[in-house]
Length: 120
Image (cartoon, rainbow, N blue to C red; front, top):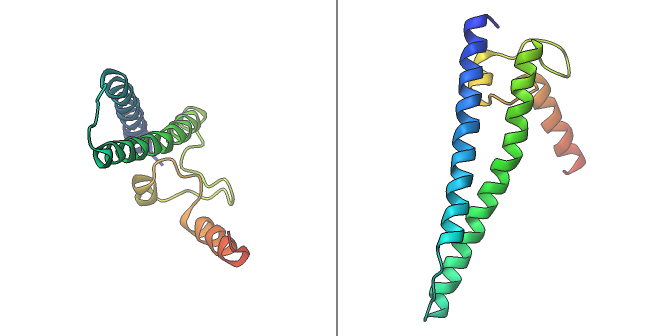
């Protein structure tokens, strides 16, 4: 991967990180500022369901933060874009689709096939 591509991915990952942190702060503000009283139990159930869904999304994003930071560390180390299984370069197209990936498409396909066989 050339230096132009590396800088593109550094900016992309930093942008993703910034967006996730901003959404997390907004969620905290929304949940702490809002004190609503619902007369109808169905309305309360809907609000609780929405809140639970939002929290699940934020939890997924929390795990993504770790992967983004690891990808940024790999950029700093000079190993970003290298498959951790076979050591081959990961295609730029794959990196654009999943910037935090650590596996080339061949190794990822093999991993998924192994998971299917094990029933994971």
